[in-house]
Amino acid sequence: MKFFLDTANLDQIKAAHDMGLLDGVTTNPSLVAKEGKDFKTLVNEICKITAGPVSAEVVSTECEAMVREARDLRKIASNVVVKLPTTAEGIKALKICSTEGISINMTLVFQPIQALIVAKVGAAFCSPFIGRLDDVGEDGMQLIRDIRLIYDNYGFPTQLLAASLRHPMHVVEAAKIGADIGTMPYDVFQKLWKHPLTDIGLERFLSDWKKTGAKP
Ligand code: G3P
Image 1 (cartoon, rainbow, N blue to C red):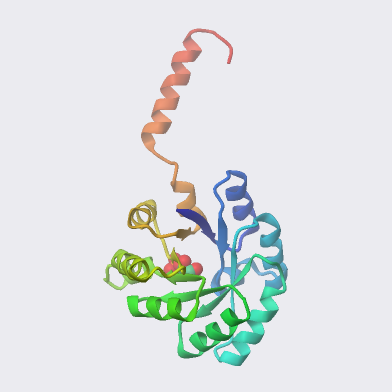
Image 2 (cartoon, rainbow, N blue to C red):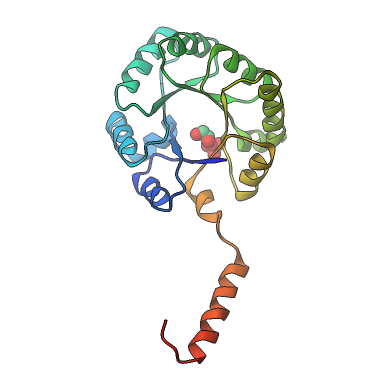
């Protein structure tokens, strides 16, 4: 499973990259707005840190304007992936962009049929939002299971990108199902290697070692 960071924060992206765990980055307009920087400059900076796919989302809602934005964003760096919303206009824009060779991540996916449609039209990535479905009392992980099954049934090359992951168990469940990618905020990423028994165990080892008086 590939790990993407769901953030536009350069320090967080650098930190994950330095650990060797960063396979790509996803951003959205809310995450970019939080950083208070020029959008394209920020995307360019992110692309300098990672060679993996970096999703940058359009903010237009009509096909023509979306395509214009997509072409523009694509010029920033070769690893930019354009995020389009899964609406009728977004799907039309996906068709044009995929024909032009622009790699597209279809976002705001909340039901299996949306995932099937975007795969048929040529999306490189499909982003179902797990946490937001859980928030409204639905089973977000079931959506990942359904999409995996559909994509495997027909051999779609579209990568299943489990998004809106809120805790490490979401990452584990998505990995067990076979999501190609999990994108997570930095606070979830930082919890991935944490276990209290690891810390307690290390403390015990070090205190026992200290008793010997030996140097490291
Ligand atoms: O970037 C898309 C998605 O991962 C957003 O997650 O936590 O805002 O529902 P969240």
